[in-house]
Length: 422
Image 1 (cartoon, one colour):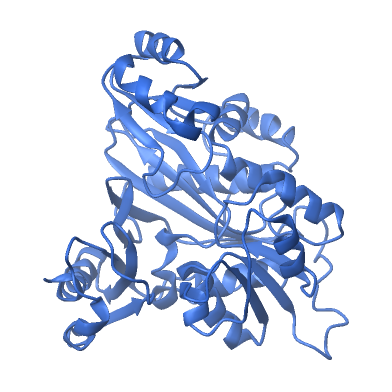
Image 2 (cartoon, rainbow, N blue to C red):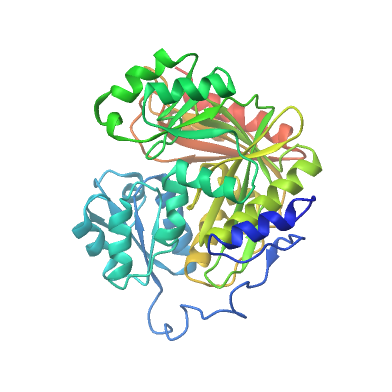
């Protein structure tokens, strides 16, 4: 690791169950578990590899598209026949990710079970594993994406840079945290929140009272975090196999509003030192928690140039959508390669790129009705998810390539605005 505290981080993270981190990070590294690893492809010449994906949203939809190209049989567990992946042609079983019988049914004819979200009870994941199903990522790794408090505690023990935080369950504990670290305070649901859900910036303890007392939230744990003055946000996306082979994508700068990613720039136009540190942190975390498949590590860059780890996702991620057009191997193909323990593809950047999310707005028409206008923008690659419009919902995205990320952003924004004009 770079910097004087590198060896301490590696030693501490090894205790979480992984190996040490290399001091240099190429785009693809060798195995840190066993030479070459045993591939799931061995002995499978007579039938395709079979993957069950829990969830049937747009991430599953785009993973299905990659599975078609690889000849992989992907089946999704969908809650509705109108889920995005199902409407995209993915074979499916109807069921709930919170139902153990439905999960077992989805897993029974698969070689590997993977996920397009983290909203599966940990006890069910462990039961699937005990029943002999191969989960990629494993329940032990997924817990770090499912429980923000657990992840924060593990990173602090490993001396990784994270915002000051504490688990809280009462207004008094929130007040004590605010008195120690200052206001405002960021109050996050420890489990279940994403796209800004379960994340609240509060100016005093009184604002925490209705949050902690409302409905089922009273039974949940919360994480209080010191407010960070964020200069930029970035994501490091990597893929890792069960044999330990790792491939790292170029850094991605993300721009969020109301907790939802609005657009991204690839490669991130940020200082090299910050990007290098972020890559090392991501690879170290991936090895330490035993991540398999795609791992997205979201980070903050503060005005002083410090990199702080924010959150993890162990699945294809919104910040990686530009890889479809911009990289040699998309994150969706790479996820399948990784969970099947197949050789990973190159992450080489073909071109600078930008992606703009198409977000639902009040009273907007279906973006599909405006698709021809958006396609008239030179170089715009439009992806629509066939989701009914509603405010704040991700309905699709537009990626454009360019001579630099800002050049690409101008064209991606032009096409996205045409899709969302009322």
